[in-house]
Length: 98
Image (cartoon, rainbow, N blue to C red; front, side):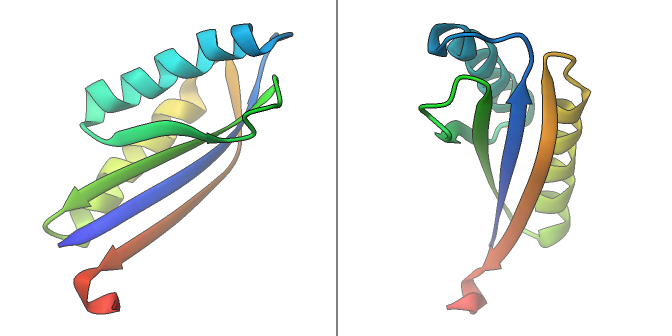
C-alpha cells in the first residue's frame, strides 16, 4: 500500500475577502475530489484572502498509481485561470517506511 500527498500553494486572482476566497477554493477542492477520488482540503493560509494551501492525499496499491493521480491533480490546479500555482510538494510513503 502506498500513500501519496501533495501540498499546493496557490495565489488567488481578484479576491478581496475571505468570503470570495471560499468561492474559489471550495469548488477547486470539490472538483479534485470528484474527478480523481482523492481526499482534498484547504489546509493552510486560512487567514490570508489571496493565498491558499490545498492538501491532496491518495492511497493506492503501487507508487505509479499514486504519482499519476497526484500529477493529474497538480495539472488541474495549474490549468485553472483563477489561481496561480506557486509551488507543489509531493511525498510518497509505504508501509515499509515505518
